[in-house]
Length: 445
Image: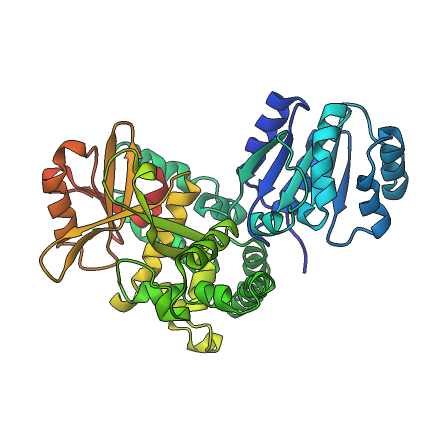
């Protein structure tokens, strides 16, 4: 398959690190597999340095890996690397990339001394879950800055399709609190395409090359299988993989938390907590924690035993919903293309909102409070803005009633800055300044 390098926002973050660090730290880019870490780092090296060496520890020889066992002679180390990779390194003008650094723990440990040496810049990539599994017995370098990387967000997806105009225009309408009018239908259609294809670069590339959603689905299935196999390497019992694969089923039940026991049976608290940490660290999953007190310090009042799980890429989520069936039986593709998604599939939009809020830099929290003896009110997402909070309710249909949001706004009116109902229709301002926001404006809140 022809490989295309897509424009990514993380490029500017890496550039900022290079300019501000000036060699005083290394950069670690963490993220799930297949999101484009290696591609964007190599593209950055080509454009921003006079030369570079990229060491892919997935396939590096034993000879290369052994170079990092002894750092007494840095001159010898750099001479060997230049000879093996046929690259001339220039002082303060070259970068060495440790790709999939978790495969060579001693190379990561060496970062401390390589940075102190000061001749070159260093960028590392890896999956956090694998990094943690491979750091026992080594000293973690304090000379690292970290950036989390996620699948392509909606604007990056539009860039990939050659559209650099739509999202800035949407932002203008959002800032002015104006409806898009006749343009809304097309904007919503474009967003539905993003939901189907997703933000995994391989899937986006397949769509651009073939315009065939069946082939895109096949690419996504390979990625999901890769993730599932990765979890099996960490937990041979298969329970971690089952928790990952069951996320769509759990969301479809419209319950107020993820119930691990319904998927893998009862676990001891420390075992369940460790599995959640592994899922979160994999960056394949987004975790929304229950905030026990809805205020600006939600990280301080989160309940780590009550949470919802989302898939980090909605395109993968769409495929996982019908994982055990053929592409032709996945009605989501057919329904979303013609904007006829059934109410019982509305949880796909909730996953989309979770992904878009995360891509915009938000931590995910939700809130429930008692309605009566048997029922709870639930706020889908809570955001901190300054010294106030913003409650969000997600509605794929039936937007005229929003009982939970109304009850929350009454109970916590003094704490609220803005309230949002995210839905499929155009922007409007409702009663009591409730903002009805189309899904494609989610990341602008």
